[in-house]
Amino acid sequence: MSTSEPVERGRRSEAWTWVIVSAVALTLISVQVPLSATIYGVPLAAAFSLTVLHVGALPLALRWPTAAGVISVVAVSGLLWLSAPTPEAPWPWAVAPEITQFCMVFLLAFRAPWQIASSIFGLSAAGSIVIAMVHGGGHADAATANIVVFVSIGAGVLGIGIAVRQWRRIRRQLVREQRINAEELSRRVIAEEKARLARDLHDVIAHSMSVINVQAASAPARLGGVDTRTAEEFADIATQARTALREMRGLLDALRVDGDAPLVEPQHGLADIGVLVRQTAQAGADVRLEWIGSDKPALSAIADLAAYRVVQEALSNALRHAPGAAIRVAVEALDGMVVIRVRNERATTQATLVAGGGHGLVAMRERVRSAGGTVLAAATSDGGFEVAAEFPATREEASG
View 1 (tube, rainbow, N blue to C red):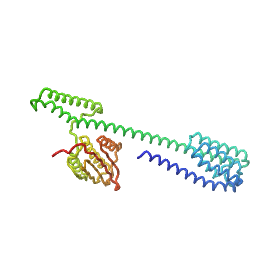
View 2 (view 1 turned 45 degrees about the vertical axis):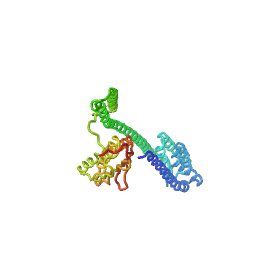
View 3 (view 1 turned 90 degrees about the vertical axis):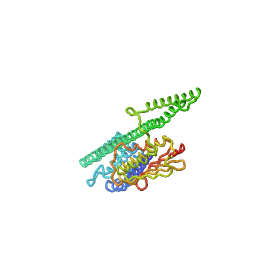
View 4 (view 1 turned 60 degrees about the vertical axis):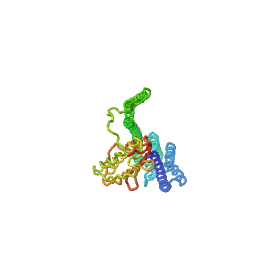
């Protein structure tokens, strides 16, 4: 997942929030104005103006929550003050203004610090209490019950808004921590892969250096008739080869992770891909190998090993994530370039998910890049997956 995807999702979510809040506001205006004017006797101009201020504060709360909260308290207080008590309808909180104020309290609790939402809710309740005391008259009991209902439901709405905001904050923190952990793990995988590359490099080069040392040390005896100066040159070459080997081993010791055993097994290469494919097929997989071009492609030793590891990792991923799918391995050694493609079809059975995976491709890219090649790994249009790697030729093809 690219880093722009969460940002894009956030923008879409914010846009939808504006659309929904604006639609709710328009609906409330269409209901609240006529009810205030007809049932509660509020002058039409005042009912329209105060309702627009009251309901219009809802979208405003998405950008400026504190200002929107203050406007909503002032507007609804004016609307309740002008409303006449009536036994046919709840008072001082009519249903429409009550719902609007609940929406405001929720938005403030959801978008702003809880202190702001609590203050606006408290001011709304206090204002209605004062209005009920001044204009209640013979409707004191009904007004008290109405305010109790408003406070009870409003407190619940406030609590839900605060809880949702805290849940979102915790979720964002968890996502951020997971992203940081994933980046750290990716860097650690790359570092470990570089250490393995160093060990592979040692094993690849150590043999050649040892051959140089043996040939240089034994040259005077093998060739015979070598003068003293030439013998000293051969001895110096052998000394330099031994020194280089010691330095390489010292570097390897510094890079080796604690507990790693020295690598003494022979390193694999493209020539061993056929054996790898046969072993995979013997395990029950439908895997085939297609080889085009030279059977001894012109690759350096480190690129040869990297090419083998690409096929090994791609086969492992295909078996793990696409069980039962047919796998095709293609090697093209043409025109100074070796191209390897490992493609699997859609899985025929449900794959077993293993936690902690997904870093093999990271190590593969690092290995191929270190060998001077390029690698692409992506899903195919038919639901499968393909890994394609290219390695440039760096030496003449082996004879024979």
